Length: 150
Image (cartoon, rainbow, N blue to C red):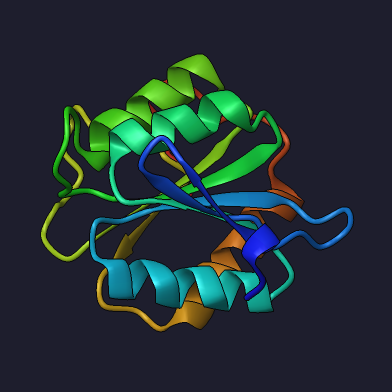
């Protein structure tokens, strides 16, 4: 990867792999190996990928990049909020963004945000690619309050 493709911003590594007219995906996971694997898979599938190690860094990228179309976030992360709180914040502030939550432990309850997809870890990278393509192709509106797309 060339130096112009990787930049440091507010403690987050922005993987700015740009493919003309492709949606931008923000991947948030504190596990660097899983995050890099997902970044590489999504970039290889033609997405522009930004990544962050926690919700605080993700919020800064969301402010700097209005072109973000999809958030893919882990639940358990260090920082001021977890992935569920990040998803809730994103859906409240930028309802046009599609949200995928991924976790090996968390199960959605009655107070879960109306995310578009919940993925149980572990899963192959092709799974997130498939769901990202479907969400960005099929859904132009946010889910209704209290309802999640699956």
